[in-house]
Length: 153
Image (cartoon, rainbow, N blue to C red):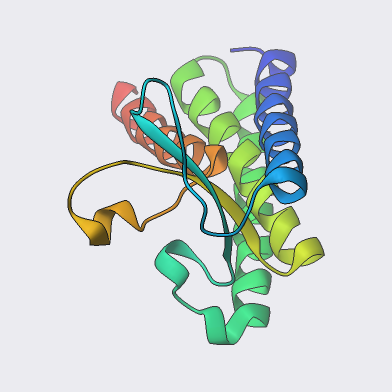
């Protein structure tokens, strides 16, 4: 994947998630569930004041700094991948990961919490209570692609 395509992919993830988060912030009610996609997903506004599963919510400053440092480190790695040819899977994974990381880091630094808005309508209440955003999915998919891309070499 070219530098331009990967950069556009990361920017598109960031922009799309930010637009959705702004819409959810403006129109959503905290905790209210709205089924979408034929009931396969639930949309609900949730303010995650920590990291994954609210870990670190009492140390939001540390979580924000750590998020920023990890995002900057991934950015350096992303830039370094353009110094050699091949391994588009690694670059695509990094692009997805970075788009999501920038979006969540932006939230942590500007809003002081991450806006999450997607959950799954399952019977198990603990799983149903987990709320994600598009950035979370992009980070997970990006990390998987990075692993697959490193095996490709």
